[in-house]
Amino acid sequence: MNKIKVNLKSFGIAVPEYVVHNGELSKLVDTTDEWINSRTGINERRISTTPNENTAGLCTKAFYEIQKKTGINPLDIDVIVVGTITPDSIAPSAACTIQANIGAKNAFAFDVNAACSGFIYALYVGESLLRTGRYKNALVFGADTLSKIMDWDDRATCVLFGDGAGGVLLTASEDEKESFYYTDIHSDGELGKNLQVSHWPLRNPFVKEEEESECTHINMDGRLVFYFASRKAPKSVQTVLEKSGIDISEIKYIIPHQANYRIVEAIAKKLKVDISKFYMNIDKFGNTVAASIPIALCEMHEKGLIEAGDKLIITGFGGGLTWGSTLIEI
Image 1 (cartoon, rainbow, N blue to C red):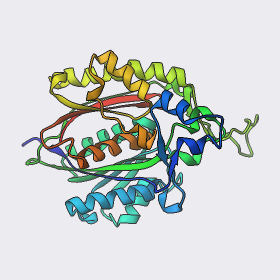
Image 2: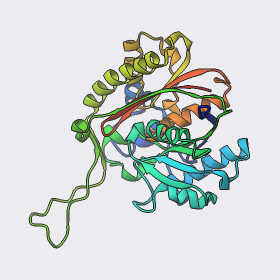
Image 3: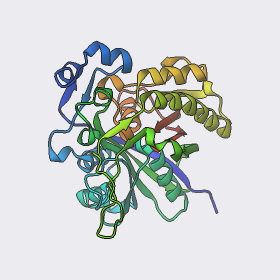
Image 4: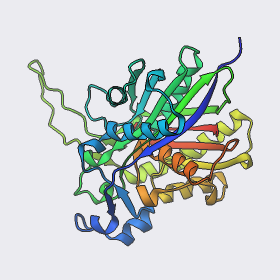
């Protein structure tokens, strides 16, 4: 029996219309455009302002971009996986809502929660399901609307994040071109409290000691996350290169999670790779969490920066704490 091959067929993105520049945030918190830009590389970000720009709505728009390029019939989709920490509801999942929106009646759908590494996790799940030979087409999204869980009085976090969605269509058959070389993913739950959204307190008629209620805003130890990402991401990139038997000189671009320009600089330094090899669009979108890597991939494709045969590494890191990398060929 021939080996099943998985191909990364097409890309699609969707971002909210409303653009929030750094200067506008200076009206909300004690900050300036210069302060934000010099420390993060961010100039502006997109923020959702209407219900159809919620997580599933943005993914739905991203799907229609994919459909325009490929002509894929929703009835031919077997799997929908969404990496997100901001679904529109706990149930149904964002993936199930997307399934309903696009009429993918023959698919099964579910979400993956790995924060800023969410797209890499979801991509690996989608790829692995197709490799079983039972399924032929998978939609994989990375999407988040962090604006709805943001503490807009917290200068340390509200300047960082933006909303958006990106997705890819994966196809599988014995005759497909193979797009995936190796995926390296990890988590360290002991560090989880350094980047978290507060939990729901345990409350029911039988609880003996009631927990204090906590707000559901994102909280982050920026220094620890910087240290964590600048150590783990380079090692993960090196792992996928070694396991794939490919030299870094063969990689056209490294697409990092768009968290902070300084983190990417630190990763480049550790890898001894020129910063120009890293694609960044954080200046326009901010940190869009699970959406950042697929948005970057789609933007690069639309700009003609990547083409068939190019080898790329995507690398992410975030809440969990989670991290990972994947080596792909367009």
